[in-house]
Image (cartoon, rainbow, N blue to C red):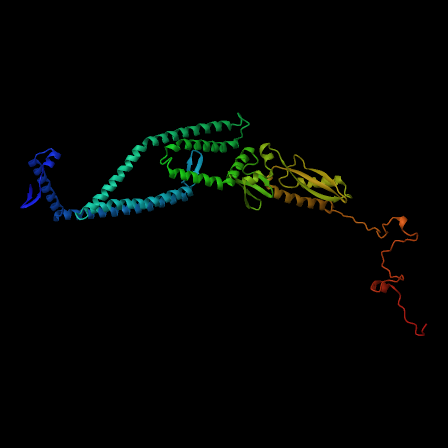
Length: 477
């Protein structure tokens, strides 16, 4: 029996001896020692000295947490300021080799959002560690604080165990990423080698960068498919549900986007136009400002930026005014038509028009301008002036100067830019009935309207004025 004074605390029975393998006196002595140690610990934890120590630890931990929180807030503020300064300096561009992944604005937005997300997470983590520690310092709340600390330790242990268990899959993903990187580099070198115009003339230099991007996209897609089974949560119902949702979303909502993307790829490899080319797409005339995978932007001479989907571009007739000048160092032919009368000698008209073209800025004298007579109309002749230029992007200004010179030189040569028109008035009052059906004394009616007795109509004041004045006979005759 174990006694506290005259009070029996408990007894050591034969079952206890059989369970622990010790004798009655040994078990009783061990129990007494444990009780004494527990009483000592209980009194020690509630002593003035221990309570003072707990208060001191609480104050120190509070100060430490306060400094940590101040450091988190101060550091995040400084970091956000630094990110903003780097963005204003445009030095946050994220590139992989020569491919720009994110611009300075997007990178700063991403980093700023990450800092703002980590700031409350770190604050909550500091408080989550501080509160259990403070609670464990006092006997009344020690059990609750210890349970929180044990919960934290348990979760950290699970996290560490999960990370260790995932290390083989992570290593496999790393190997796939490394192989993918070297495959992309090999493909890049092969494509760059193909772009050497002196060796492979069939592969144009402007195809190099688009082909590199397409090859990179294809290789990364294959690598993602291979690495998919090694991702966390792969094969789970949540992962499958998200995959099905994204697949349905892309299938139903991206038909036009896919059409524009495919059209953009086709336009790249058909070489319909390049950047800075002066082109016409339907009614839009201007310089190609941007050519992306989905749209083409054209800057008109009126400084209007027109965005055209690539699917519409592919389905339209594209007139490229700059291709002949860029590819073969040739010249673009500008032409305009005027109509003049048959009374003017055509040789003189040709000479005046060619002089006007040669006096126009940006019109090349060699090859020499020429004139075509495109039509012999009813009342005039159509003269088409053709002139060569090496500056297609100046076409509106060249046309304006050319028309001004045509006016000036024609005026100086006493040529009136006028299209004459002739009209004839013929007598159509004769009946169209065959002559066999007309009476022998038939006479076609005249143009002058007459009364039934040969007198002019009463309503025609002009005919009245043309008749001599008559006065009534006063004698009744």
